[in-house]
Structure formats: C-alpha cells, structure tokens
Length: 131
Image (cartoon, rainbow, N blue to C red; front, side, top):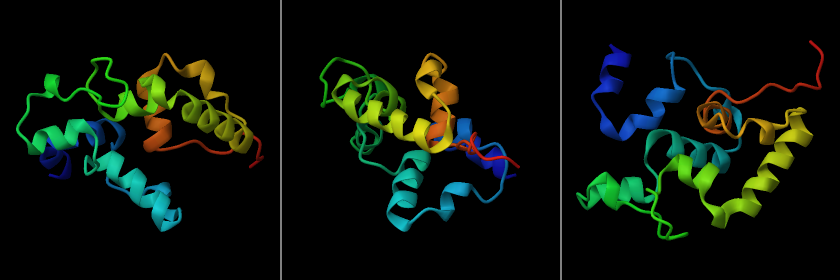
C-alpha cells in the first residue's frame, strides 16, 4: 500500500528511486539541520525550480536552473551533480566523503543513479572500518 501511494504522487519522483523499503533511514541519526536538508531533497519539499515551478503550474521543461542559466531543469540531480556553479562545493563534498569513508566517488560520477543514492539515499558505510 505504501509503494502504491508513492506512485500516485508526482512530487515524490526522486524519493521513489531512492527508497525501496519502508524502514528507518540512517540519515535520521544526523543532527537536525543536516537531516532536514536531506529530507527536503529526498521528498521534494525544497526551493529548487523543479518544486517552485510546480507551485506556479509551469511545465517541467520551463523550470530551468536560474543559477547557471544553461538551460537544464533545476532538479536535485542537476544541483548535486551537474551545475557548474556548484563545482567547487561538489569537489569538496567528494573529497570529504573519500576522507571519511575511503570511497572515491569521483570515479563513479557517470553512474548518476548510484551517486544520487549515495548522497541522499542509503549512503555508504565506512570502507576503512573492519567489521
């Protein structure tokens, strides 16, 4: 029933791709400010054009990124992985992830579904820790 309800809500387009089971997510253990930002990205309750354009009843194709003004729709994937304006922040994020987990995600950037799932989906374990 939960999965069926997800399919009926267009604003949950990203959430459907990163959430496959009804279970508590690890990101919920983060401090409130971080947890809130991740939840906003996951659930489509953010201020990206993909969402604000929906409020204004714009067609999806018209919800372009006003930050880089290059033409693509400003959605979560564009902001996190593609927008050149955020390139330095993206590089720092990937470096921080590598230092903290041992995973070099820069080698996986072509697999955008995987990277999105790591960043706002299920995350990564610590590669450097032994079990």
